[in-house]
Image 1 (spheres, one colour):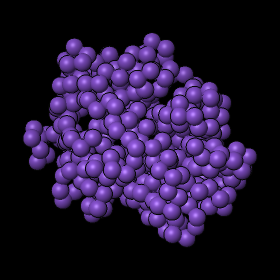
Image 2 (cartoon, rainbow, N blue to C red):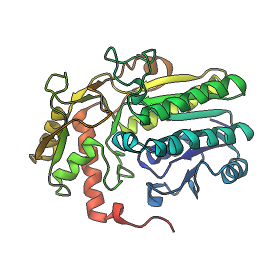
Image 3 (cartoon, rainbow, N blue to C red):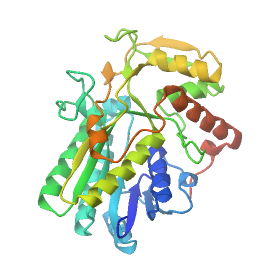
Image 4 (tube, one colour):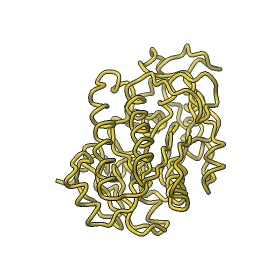
Length: 339
């Protein structure tokens, strides 16, 4: 256990809120920094303190680090929609790269020793081989991936110059919801396939667009490695434990299960779990979408004390469906954010 609190940026969002739960359940003290532009205050567990603040506000962030004796930062805040990054790249370099630079400087000035960064498989671009290992070439094909890769480079350089170690966790496709129903993907207009599909299955959408049916894959649709958000949150806690135990070492690790499913296979799973035939509409490819992203996850299994607990596509869909039904019943996603 670290001597101090963990600051979670973006902790009112989808993945961040699950990391907060995992940290609290493991006995850590947590302070959340979130501007609530896309997050929800109700998504932050009441055991954590929420500070409504942008991570680029160095004065307030540094005061929070000092006031809460922050010993580690988990950084989730940022923008995440690939097609939007192609249309509005400067937004992504501001929200992901420039804001991360401000946060990292705040951490260095205040003496934070451990930093865990929410990175992405989009850093690889179009991979030469699949599954993708961490030593594969990084050549992003969209500004989202580039913005994340630039932050990885900053952390590498900062760790060489200052007493800080880091873990860059490269996510593949995150899906599902907290098995206990405490959090889930709540963003209105979210672009995650499983989220969209369960919305369609529960009547909140009239169908699912399949972007691209001519990829060089087994059925022509894009293939992705889907990881349950609760497993991903557990990986963050395990990464923190590793950084604390070995304070001179840093790590860049894939977060995935090592096998991929096509868009049509995911929709088949949704039909199977929901017992509803979701309408599928074939459309053209989206800008910035590679054909196949599947993790080689041997490094994370060898490095962290972590093993997947919910490594099953139907389980991921079932947990996402349960959360979607709760959203519909309680109207959570439509509730106003903290004023």
